[in-house]
Amino acid sequence: MIRAENIRKSYGTRDNRCEILKGISIDIEDGGFTVILGASGSGKSTLLNVLSGLERPDSGSIFYDGENIAELSDDSLTAFRRKNIGFIFQQYYLLPNLNVDRNVKMGAELAGNKDYADIINALGLSEKRRKLPRELSGGEQQRVSAARALAKKPSVLFLDEPTGALDEETGRSVLDYICRLRDELKFTVIMVTHNANIADMAKTVIKMNSGKIVGQYRNQTQKTAYEIGW
Amino acid sequence: MIIGAKDVCKLLGIVIISACAVFVSTLFLNYNLDLNGIEAQIADESRALYDALVMTGSVVSAVSGGCLLMTSVVMLCFYIKHYIDSHRKELGILKAMGYSNIRIAAGFWVFGLSVFAGTLAGFSGAYLIMPAFYSVQNESGLLPDFSAEFHPRLLILLVIAPTAAFALLSVIYSFFRMKTPVLDLLKGKPDSKSRDVAAKDNMPFLKELKKITLRGRRSLVFFIAFASFCYSAMVQMSFGMGDLASEMMSAMTFMIGVVLAFTTLFIAVTTVVRSNAGSVSIMKIFGYSGRECSSAILSGYRPAAAAGFVIGTLYQYLLLKIAVEVIFKDIENVPVFEFNVQALIIAAVSFAVVYEAVMLCYSRRIGKISVKEIMMEAE
Image (tube, rainbow over all chains, first blue to last red; front, side):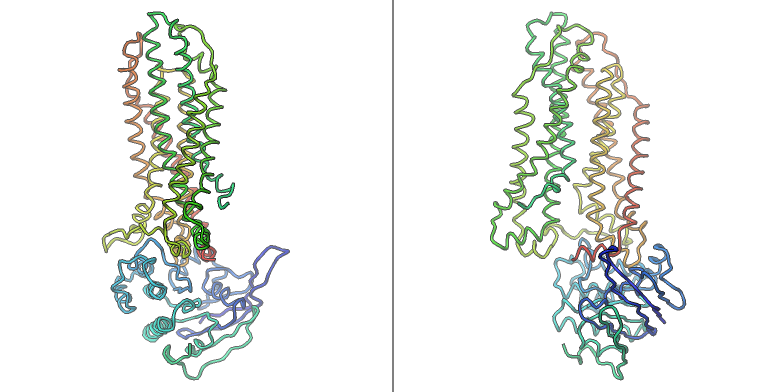
């Protein structure tokens, strides 16, 4: 269980301070698929960064199975991410000078995963293993990003607008593979998106606006990546 | 105008190297010209000393000036490449708007100003120290007294010509670099000439990253080796000169070596860290520690530094050996030159300590790179 209690986060100096997260409290169940839905500027990416331990909140607590990661030192937070967290970002953030194989290996080695080639193959990248990111299309780069995150065998996978830069076909295939793997390995998925259609895939949907949670609901049935609208 | 004063300020390395090159060359060439002017007054018994001094001046100017000039050329090309790489989008927008390659490249002449600043500083510095240098050169009193004259042709040869040449080189080099397709510039794609580096499949990721980081930035490997070379050669030479030269010459050699070495080292390591900040940030997001990142990014340069040190040791030994056995062979009472083991130990230990201290500082800097660095870069 991930529990966030009264999370506040601001940016800027004293005169120019802007509060992005205004006292957010949420519970996220293990193994579930949660979507944080909101428009641009609603604070959803900041919430994802805070929940995943990329940033510390100004105040509030984030418990992972009872451990408050908001109190961890930088080194401990890094170790926490190493052990538990995987990321897929809209901009991919691949290492530009490393080929596909090595980008995935970067994640795999942290988990001692020597069979990461299976993930590369499953994501249709077997022919591209020796290609550098600049030699790939956007969709292929996002699949590499997904392979890297999944090869790390995370217990929680955070996705920040993962299909934002993808065409429909590629977007659906990436989401489908992540969901199939989640069903198999039972890791938790937390996805930030502005696309309300993707929320139909989630078990839990948290709506955000202006740094606050404005709604939360559960889908009775979860649609697949090929059933949702685009 | 797309190149600001801030960008030109980053060319400090070229300023310092060209200042050192012109400082040494001005001292010796000016001395040679003035010595030439009194050739008729040289007594027969002083002829050998005269010839030796003229040859020393020519060799020192050619070797140090030439070597440092080549380094400045490499450094200038490196800076321009770095500038274009870090301003790809802006340059791409200009190209997309219809500016021609030559029109954009013409703006790069400004980089030549760094050479102007350096050469002018070196030239002026040499004239300031010249009276003392002249009296030291003729300490034996075997030559007639003469004072330093100003030679305008040296100003043209050592300040104006290099500035014009480097400005032209900047334009030509940037013109060829600007041939990158406009879409590649706009998308911020890295140099299309970079290729995947082969490595063993079972090699650990961090070792692979270290190897690829080194291969991808060969110019930085050169600069780190050069820094070590400068320190090794100049420091050992300053100690090794001993009775062969004045204390002033030793001190000058020592100072130039230290300044050149550490300026080059700082610039190279700063560039290594800056150019890998995005990759470090991604690695940290996934849970690699600061220590793992800095080890992968920085530790690969040690062999280059060691190689530079060894080459510097051999270079200074051979140079002094040649000076004693060829240039000064006809001069009486020239002391015997032997390899100075003590100087080697002092130079090696001091360089190792400073090098590791610098690397430790930069490791800490890598440790402080934020996980959000890559997100800010993307924006």
